[in-house]
Each structure stands twice: as structure tokens, then as C-alpha cells.
Image 1 (cartoon, rainbow, N blue to C red):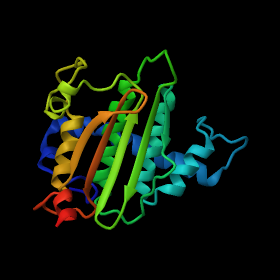
Image 2: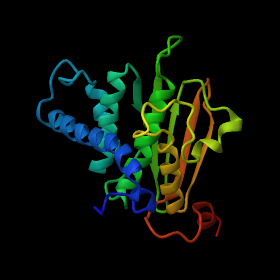
Image 3: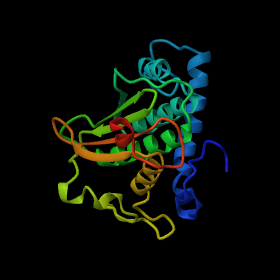
Image 4: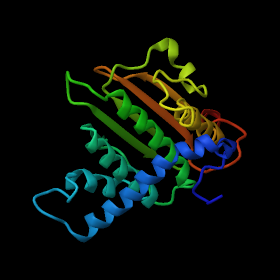
Length: 227
């Protein structure tokens, strides 16, 4: 298994591997876009794909790890194609030397994809998704929020169960309800927690806190801090 693939048993499942091809494709597209950004610097403030240079520049400035940076730019492209504004919060920062960056890529990618689905076909306001990333010596914290309809409190545990989805599956070969359980599996493998709550102004916010160092788990992030 490549070093940047999350080391969790969940990835032995063929459906999960197929599901994650979209994240891999977005990361590759992000790498290509970053190469254009570095080499062309076109005017007046947009890349050939129409992405604002300022948005890409913020990601480059605040995210040091090349894999996570590429993933975010790839999601920026995906959001633009769907008419969604995707932004990185102004206080975000991740260094380049993230241990197990593939874990972060998978978590962020799946949460962003869910958020993009949540704001699809909105007409009352601009569909918006925001990503926040923070890091210290012991904890990586990330959140993804959207201004969609939110998540009913009675469903906030159920949605992390495999197969749980409010969206119909288009094919038995492409089952729903894989992304959030995968996020939870990776988060718990790194001793962390994932929560979902209400976004101020409407919508949902998913927050993940997990150990900055990838290890086989013996205690949660919260217990490490309190100890």
C-alpha cells in the first residue's frame, strides 16, 4: 500500500477503493492546476480554467503540504464546475511535514464532496463551502461548513454508519453511504473525534480533531490533552 494511502482496514473494500478514485482524480487535477499557476501567472487574475488566482494563492500560502494543497485546488475546480463558491478560511494553516497526509486528503475530500452535494441546486443564495485547517504539535483540526439545509439532529449519529445516506444510489455497483464512515474510521484510527453541528446562519459544519502523528491508537486526542 502506498505510504500516503490511509492505513485502515476499510480500504481493503473494493467499493471504498472505487469511491476514492474521485478524490485521487481531483488531487491529480489540482497538481496540474498548480503547475499552471506557478508557470503562467495569467492576467487579469484568473487561471485558464477560470479559477481566481487569489483563491489558489491563498491555498498555496496557507497549505504547505503539496498533496493536501493539490487536493484543495482540485476541489476548487470541482466546486467551480458546479457553481459553488469554495473558500479556505483566512486563519487556516498546515505545515508541509504532515504525518500521513493521505489521511487528511481523504477526510477533507469526502467532507467537501458531501458539502458540495448539500448545496447543490440552491437558489435562495450563493452556495458556499468553507474549509478551515489548523495544526499544532499534537493535533490536526479541520472543519468543513456549508450553507445548505443542515443535518437533522436525530440523524447526526446515523450518517456515520456505513450505507447511511439520504441520497438514492444510482447503481448497486456505486453504493452510497461510504464517505462519512470512511472519515470516521480514519479519524478514530488517529485517536480523534468527528462532530457535526449547525453552521451560524444556516447549514452544517463538520469538525474533525485527530492526532498530528499517525499511530496505532491507544487513547483519544482529548485524553492526550487532558493527561
